[in-house]
Each structure stands twice: as structure tokens, then as C-alpha cells.
Image 1: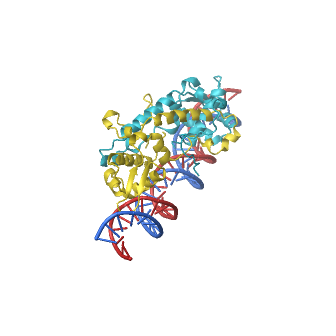
Image 2: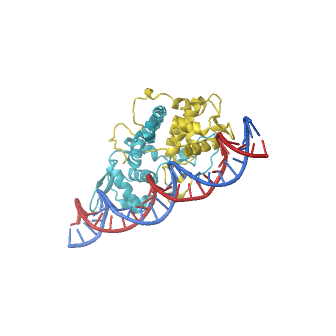
Image 3: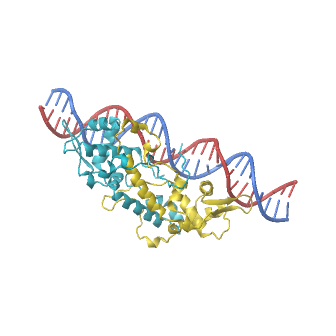
Length: 156
Length: 156
DNA sequence: CCTAAATAGGACAATTTTAGTCCAATATGC
DNA sequence: GCATATTGGACTAAAATTGTCCTATTTAGG
């Protein structure tokens, strides 16, 4: 549930790479591709999005490349997701009032908001610096967003 | 970002309806459809999923219908999402090791886990009883999962 | 036993979203 | 001028989502 798109997944890898090889130097997309093993066209796409989103800055032409605009400690997971996934609403009725017009008694919307805020609060506390934490610190292998008590069946 | 599917959205409306008209009585799908203004075939689909997921119980035949298996206070948002969205991983490398095999230095996986746990913790604290809370309690109109500081541009 | 009321299970097509690549334009350094 | 890079957007193929429908099964009641 609540899965993120591949672009977002790639984006974090790219950001982590920039955070590592960043001494204030510019890092061309080809470098990022080599470092992350993500295909170059995809890296280019991701970097464009990150640049437009204001998380990295770019320099064109020979010797150009990309660089983080801020220290990794000052880039939150919330920002990263906002930039890469876009400001998509959690529920449908947030931007179209479609069936909620038919159901004025819909008392659910407010609660989704509650959930949203809780999620956002959690993501504001995590920074890009945390994202490059060695995996050893997190023993579990799967990132499945699933309660421990339920039967965990892989999709597909 | 992190949007939920329509099925999940419908599902919560259906569950809230069941929570309301539930005196231990069985509620046929047609009733739920009428009460929520969601098309009957869709309601049927949702109820089937909820039944298989163990959140509601059903009785077939004339006089049959659906009923919550537990009190609304004892059904968490996490369970609801698990049932309706399915146990989908937050990141791709959680169930296929595709590009993570190419990148043993991928130090991101652990952090997604951290985020996942934070999100899950937030959703464990919210129950179906909270979901039917009157909207007045939550003044904001939009459920956009988006930080306050950024430019909020509607998708599409 | 027969009929009407219901759920169970799954098939299905249409729509939408996502993924990944590629191309033409622009900018920069040497 | 030329090689190096980013910029912006177009584009197609694949995948997921949506919503509906059909058939089988079950149950209550006369």
C-alpha cells in the first residue's frame, strides 16, 4: 500500500549520490548514472525534476552538472516526495468534489487529513542525511508497509 | 503524493456507513449503495474485498448482507489500508532485487523502512471511529499531503 | 419445491497512469 | 568552432486502475 513511484525511488538514490560525491563540485548526469547504475536517460529525467523542484541546482555547458542546493541534513523526506511525486491529494474529493457533492454527510475527509498530517510529520523528521544511513542500522530486509500481525502475501 | 486508490476511498465510506447503520443487523449491499451514493456494482466489489480481508462478515441468501466484525474503535486505519490497497511495498527493491543487485551500496532501503514505520505508527493510532468524526473538527478543506511552505499547484 | 433475495468469484474492456527513451534547442568552456 | 551538458518536451509501450457484468451458490419464506 501507499507505494511510491519508481521515479521517486530513483530520485532518492540520485540525491544520496549527490550528497556523497558533493564537495561543492558539480556532478554531471553521466557520473550519477555510473554511480547509481540507473540508465542515463532516466537519471537525466530525474535530475530535471529535482532541479525544477529546487532541490538541486544545475550548470549547463562543458564542465557543468548538478549539485545539492542545501546540506543533506536540511533536505527533508517530505520535500523529496513533494518534488518527485508531486502534490497529489491523498483522497479524490480533495481536488474534485465529484461524489462528495452527492454525499454531504461524508465524514471521512477530515480523518484522511489527520492521517496525512501524521504521515507528513513523520517525513519532516527524516532528512536526506538519514537516508544515506548504512543499511546495517536497519536489520529488516523488506520495506513492506505492512503491520506485523497480518498475513503478508506478496503482490503478484 | 502517496495517493490512495479510489477503491480505498470508497471502502472507507462503506465502512463508515456500516459503522453507522450497524446495530448488529445485516446490511445488504443495496442499502450501502443507497446510503453512500456509490454505484451498486462498485459497492459490491468493495464489500467483497472487505469480506475477504476479514473486516466485515457476510451472510448469503435472502435477508443476508454485511456487518462489521468488530467495533469501529477496534478497526485501525492501517488495517483498512492493508485490506484495500494490499500489502504493496513502499519501494520497489522490497520485492524485486532488480537494480539493488547492481548497487550493493544502496543505502536508502533502510530509511524507507524508517519512514514506513513512522507512517504505520500514525495509522495504527487512527480507528474507524475516528474516521466518522464530523468534518467540522478539521477546518481545512483540502486533504493534500503537502507541506505548508511550498507552492501548491493542483495536478492537472 | 420454487422463487426471490443476496453474496461469491472472476472475467472483461476502457481508461488512466507510469516508465523509459529520444530528439532538438540552448548554454558553456577551451 | 567543437565537444560537453543541461532544458524542455514528445512519444510509445507497458502496467495498473476502474467500473461493470455474468454465472454460480446460498438462504428465507410461502
